Amino acid sequence: MRTIAQIISYIALILLVAVPVLFYSAAITLERNKSMMLIATIVWFISAVYWMGKEKESAS
Amino acid sequence: MSEEQQEKHGEFEREPVPESKTRGLKAFVGMYAGEHCAGTELMIGPLFVAAGVSAFDVVFGLLIGNLLAVLSWMFLCAPIAVRARMTLYYQLEKICGRNLVTLYNLANGVMFCFLAGSMITVSATALGVWFNFPMPGLTDIYPNSVGWVLAVLGVGALITLVAAWGYDMVSKVANIAAPWMVLVFLAFGIIGMRQFIEVTGAEVNSLSSMWALCKESIFKGGDPLPGQVKFTFWHVTFFAWFANMAMHVGMSDLSVLRFAKKSWHGVASASGMYVGHFMAWIAAAILYSLQLHLDPSNTDVLPGPLAYRAAGVAGLVCVIIAGWTTANPTIYRAGLAFQAIMPKKSRFAVTIGTGMLATLAGMFPGIAMKLLGFVALYGLILMPMGAVVFTDFWIFPKLGLKQYYAEHKKISINWAAGIAWIATLVICVALVKSGKPQFQIFFVSLPGWFIASGLYIVLSKLTQKGDA
Image 1 (cartoon, rainbow over the protein chains, first blue to last red):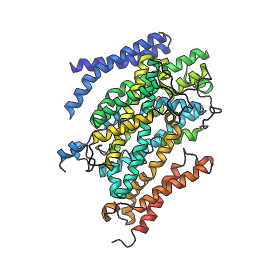
Image 2: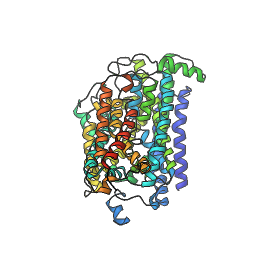
Image 3: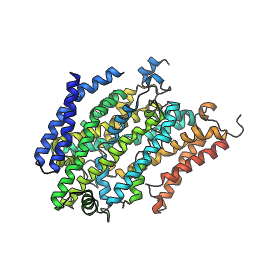
């Protein structure tokens, strides 16, 4: 479960960079860019809270 | 006090951190990246543009200034932190005596509160976009609407509760938000560049054409906006170096790096400098420059609207969280400073009080709008005590002078340290007031450090005369 959460988190981060790059290359509009960044943000916080918290607990 | 009691009391505020509680490089990389990729970066970048920086000055000034800052953490602060493993406040108490350190802690805590307040200000500008209340302009000093006061109050209360929970909670929030936040800042820069290309009609297909766009449209140089100081290469370099002077040269980060396993872990500060104080400052500057390009009369530096125009709701969330994760460790540090004055109070209670003070400061936008000057002043005020700690730790044994003199003599005030601190500030203020460009507030801390060290040595030789 933790591994799945990590994979989802990394995908969210990749999306967060890829979307502005697509906007830079004029492949998507600014509005599309904004909504995709919001989705990536939501996904990151839901998934990262899960596995980053667990990582700290097991390390301490 | 046992280790268990220490942990209940706080986090080894009055004992060296034991080896078992030290942390690896990774913990500090995340902490520094999160702390220095913050809401205030969205103020500083735009203020550079308002100060009329050119492309060369901002890029190369930041590269060199940030390198000097990292070296200061690595070679001034961290080596003492991992050897003594004490908070700055406890170490100063041993050097300066209880009464003098109380005065220092008061100054330090108040400065941290103002800094945290400006971070809360930044986060509150994001709420202004959502709730559409009147927000402060570049020249505003006092709160200008009920909505603004309520927004600052809400953000401040949330930040205070998290900071009161302790270092681990602060570290956890910063660590989770840091990677996301860094990429949102990067996105600001990419989006801003694209928007600049669209509005100027420039053709950007190589590094040289991008540099041309930077020189001709984004960082045009020339005169600053009315009321702003003109920034040159040297201003940018020294500002980047001294932006966190209180933390590295001033030794505040002894309290953080005392948890580091090795002194070279001070290199972790590079994550904060080059991500936060290079990439993020430039990204924020691009957004503000675009705003000026589209409407030269709109000089407001409001991170919320700037971020919203570029990245929508994700941008706004970034502004809130960026302010939050920076204010957290700042309130935590201020809490440590105040707790050193009131050691019997719990750190939780002290941090709550500190957060309330920071929230009050955040309601006054004048602090955030004058952030460049405030940051330089803040470093100057705290720097002399960093010089005292450095000199006491490294130079005194070589000169045969007694370290930790106040503890040794059981005195409540070490006049050598006290006079060195106050006299340095008086001399530096006089130099700034002289009006000579080389002694502007942004530069004066460099000679100030040597003045403080020299005074402390000379005065200690006098006060320790006759001691066995």
